[in-house]
Image (cartoon, rainbow, N blue to C red):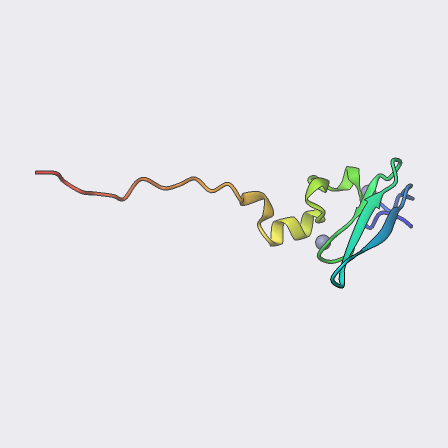
Length: 87
Ligand SMILES: [Zn+2]
Ligand SMILES: [Zn+2]
């Protein structure tokens, strides 16, 4: 497998383990091996290495994190525009 951006061969892997809970509830756990240096984008499935992804902790590639505005989550509350005069 290789990075979609720089075409470098990536190392490590993701292991999938499923856990069946009582009540027909199944939990799928994804865990990366310690040497993993890439992510598979949660949205488009693209494999990118960590050096080609600015925010690998989001689980999205750069394109998708921009597309969904994941990085603009902390909006500043606007206090301007409240023009009440107290007489
Ligand atoms: Zn790369
Ligand atoms: Zn993506």
